[in-house]
Amino acid sequence: MTDGPSVSVISQIADELTSEEKKALLYMCADLNLQAPAQDVKEVLKMVTNRSDLAGQAVLLELIYRIKRFDLLKRLLRSTKTEVEGFLGSKQSAVSMYRVLMADISEELDRGDLQSLIFLLTDSLPRGRLSQIKSFLDLVIELEKCGKVSAEQLELIEGSLQKIHRMDLAKKVLKYKQNEQIHRAGGAVSYPNQKSHYIPQAHGAGSDPRSPVGAGCTPFATWDNENIKMSVEESGFPHSQNPGIYKLLRRPLGVCLIIDSIGIDGDILRHTFEKLHFRVVLHKWLSLQDTYLALTETARMQEHKEADAFACCIISRGFSSGMLATNNEGPGLHFEDVRRLFSAKQCPFLMAKPKLFFIQNYAVRQPGGYFTLVTGDLEVDGYSHNAEVEPILTEADLCWSYSRCDACTLEIPGHHSEFLCTLSTALISGQKRQADLLDVLTEVKSATNEKNCHNLKDVCYMTLQHSLVKKFVLQ
Image (cartoon, helix red, strand yellow):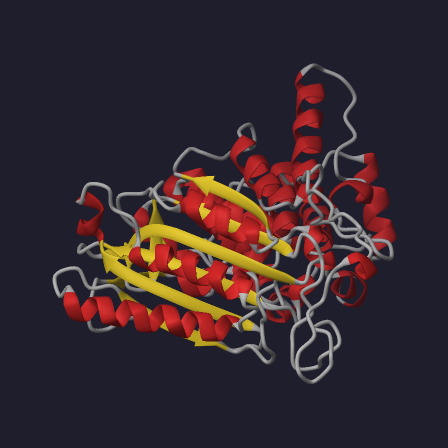
């Protein structure tokens, strides 16, 4: 290794780092007791190299190695990845292994993972700090300030990674904890100075680090299509062969997820969609976080690959554009983000397959915040009869049927959703005559509007949007 780098070399290194690399470097230096401005990377690096008690040149090499800028190691610091690995393998690291772990996890999480983690940990964070979190390290720093995460306290991080199915990263946390236990017991520890532990490895062909472990998904039974009765339209084509009709032959047809936060009409929907040949998964009285977990776990189901369709029914209190589940106040979950979880990008197994959403929203009259998965920001969304926020259908094969009633109707003894009861009856009737789904939903909307004309005190607002490119013939 060479003598310490010059000031110009330090400046050049700092200038070539990305904002995320700078953030990771500063985070890893937090335990080195440097007397330098917290966000000034150049000053931090200068302080590192000038500290004789830290063997500054070695620490600088380690920091650049940890952020995986091997090009800077070679070009500006006259060293190589192999040399640094050999050095780290023979000496104790100057950088906290806890901070190295957090920085590596941050690098391996994509935007969707980060949004899921922020949502899961919303209740663990100060409300006013949510909008400041732009990266996993930001999230960890806020949790550290609250005393909920530290080098000795990683259960919250490990559990959250498991919940979003990043088992590969949860295992890294577990490995770190095991090494710490061995270290405290006075045993020999294989710390992540060796690249096999915390430096991301290339995944083999066909492997997926996000795949749920033991998800318990029930595979679809293999049915012989020859034994399935197919109706023939006047064109002479069976439904499976008519290019203008979705193929709906599998039994079960697909998954129908029902989230009933009210506990009234979920069983009616279960009975209806079982008759329509869906495999129904019914959840009642889930909290908002558990609702989000149920949605994300359903979106990741492998059985969508063998399905012909998907349905999602939500019954919940909420505001004009989102749901509260059983929570009494925000942040809530935007319906637009519910739909996005099952988009072709997030759920590729459902690409080009019809995805049906049926929403009964009981609107409350108090304002609340909504956690937006796209930006991570907290938005304020007040109740409004006149300004209903409708999702924008940006891709094909979607059907969105939405009803909003005032939450005060839930206080009526024996209440049932007019929309859901009418929908259930119409779907079963439509199945008997092999009607197109859109025709059935148009009938439901007409019936709803007619009832509104005769009952102005209990108005049920209903919208219907779709981007279906074929007919969905009920069978």
